[in-house]
Length: 577
Image 1 (tube, one colour):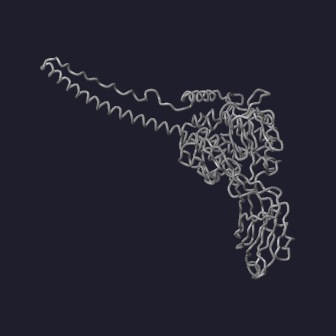
Image 2: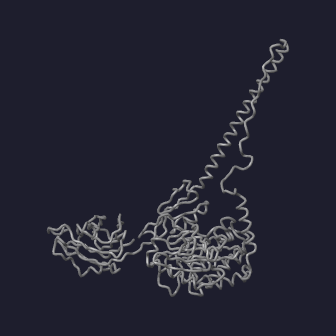
Image 3: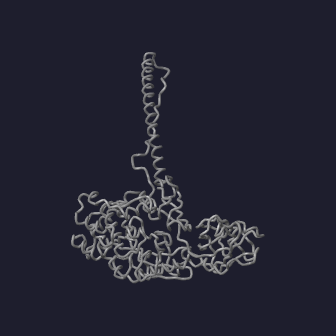
């Protein structure tokens, strides 16, 4: 059997995100299960993503706390980046809330306290988690809560790993400052834990919606419904703690996880040495009831007593013997007629019974067919992967990302397509998704001017401004008398480029409008292949049918410029894969 990185036997996928997949694996050397988080292609080829993944490993390696999932090992090679964690036998807090509903206040307080304790340790080491949510809180067999997935964590000494103004996190659990793309600190994690605390005691998060923007607006502007309105017997002290966590301004929240812990201890909601015994019992009861409620195979079978009864036996009639007397025969004939009439009545009743039973069987078969195909898929297109996961789990389905498509306009993880489609059934309980991914920049190695039909030069001194990441500067053509190059015997001018790696998407920024150009790929033997057209907008993107390593922008029509002359100004050209 082939071993992953020469040591581990990979098992089923436990979860998959925009850049990574988490596998259950077996370590034959130490005879134990582990969880392996693996950076998946094509993101495993991006230096920026690999550096961020390495930062995650180094950050978690600094942490050692009973309420944080333990990192066992990490490794890298030319093609692989992976982290090995302890495998937590149990379930996520998300599954617990989904299966049991709201938790008792003390159980919720105990879990919140354990996570706050883990966060206090992370914050002490300069790490902000940024993705505290029920899916990332695991409950082991002893009832101990463990926080996992530091994939988007950040710290004061770290270099910036997200674009300015980008939104990072899970929409239902983001702090207002995360939604607005502002810098975050440990108080952002306290807000997210407050959302989790609210959901534990009420069964639902305080802010919900169908899109990231809709939920984000509520985080920034809306006040949460007091949890006591949903849970009338909730203590006033617990409500005050939750609502203080959810203050919009960071300075109005608990200023540290230790301060939050102090509040929980003061309310007798959390004891550091106490294992959540009531919670463990609840977990075990749920696990037993779930197992006992279905068959061993997991296939639905009709309950006892619903099968159709066998059809009634037919009634046999005996012919009258030929040697009996007429009177006796007459008497017997009358008796026979009565029996025939009763038989016809019984036959009619039997036919009606069979008809009813037949309809019942058809109904049961139809119900079995619907149950076997699973629930109808919700509409996930246009939402985030986080919302898709939640919406699918709410109806008993799960999602699987089968394709990632580069996008410069949508947030990474935006759902572009789903199978089955919204309202349809099937798929074996899995909705397959096509989602956007973050683009991987491709560096431009060289760029040159191109004027083969003129004097072989077209403002070469400005070329470097095309690739300086400054869209206020750029390259500009010479001035011509009209849009068709002033009547000169030339069909166009342009620039050529050579890339450090093949690219699949091109972005062009321009201060000019109304010009036309063709993007051409140039092979090593000089063969020119048209790859698309540029329509003279200030920002244009072009997806290539095949990866391009070198080519040119061939401008065929100019835009109006200065002093009644015509030219084209390009601010930046960028490439991605």
